[in-house]
Image 1 (tube, rainbow, N blue to C red):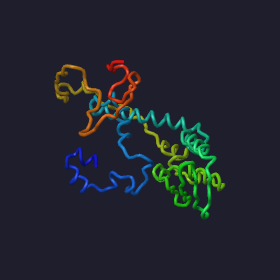
Image 2: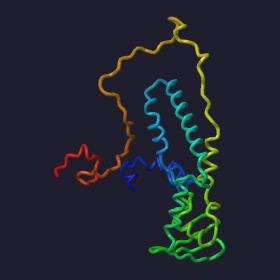
Image 3: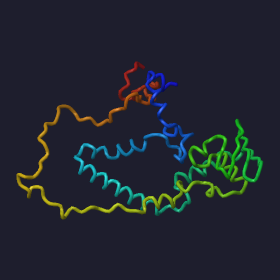
Image 4: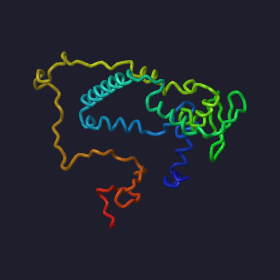
Length: 244
């Protein structure tokens, strides 16, 4: 409703022709592992912020070198892991085991259980890998309710966790290396003389170059809490001018 009000009726035709699986996780047929945003693209843009102002060939070469180094570092780092899951996920699993040790787990069938917490009651289906809290389906990682069911039913949690979160899957994603591209055979542009294609002569515009990305239409900044005035807004302690 908020989206429709802000668009002033322009969203009606847009949403009518847009399939719901493009913007709703509940309608998406595949697994998204809890992601439904462009944060990955923003992270990549931040990684190549120094190369974005370069010409196209230097931009592509800079991206190739960064990705090549990143793959090598991650492959070497993951070779020291001895856990079934990646380290962060292994810690998350252990934390969820400790979270609900006092919860009551009741068995309905061989694979369906009921978990009673301090403030709610949920149903867990181990075969379908579902929990009525919907966190298991959304993250594709067992929630605290499902982990407690596995503990009480003497089930191995790793059998109910997607391969996406496992160390073996992480290593296989970085097995294929990105090789270097030598340029010893590359011709020297100065050898072509006056017939060589030169870049156009341009004049650098005055002022500092823009470093921040241009926000899309309708995008709003997330408010932050200032540590000086303790108020939500779009400023921090350094730029705060509220009278204290």
